[in-house]
Length: 136
Image (cartoon, rainbow, N blue to C red; front, side):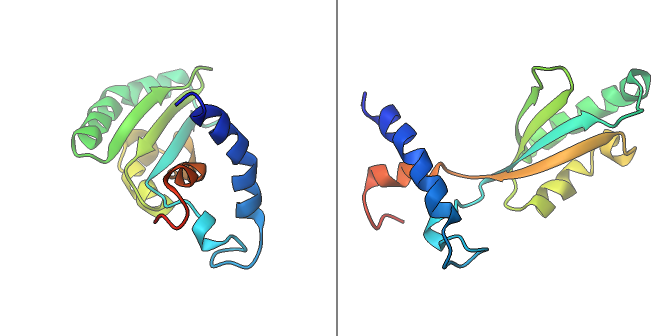
């Protein structure tokens, strides 16, 4: 068990190289190296020029809508950014478009007060090496 973390740390550069090689199904990446998208990280920051008062006027509705999405299983996790500049959501979606459709239902998005960054995420690919060659 003590060897797992050093092994994974050693495998990260290998995974990067494997993902950047050509001859594949998607943009030059071998299909075996493409992680399955299991969620989308959404990073939100307040748009430049939007005041705290504009945001705070909508926050009660935003909180209720966010909790509803959580209870409906659409948002798995949410966090405040450590730098105080916004929030981070882990959305239960398989594509960026699906995550965007979920996030666009929130009041701050409807008022176009936030900038969003969408990052599809999935399992850490070097973990597959732990279960053996050919594992699907």
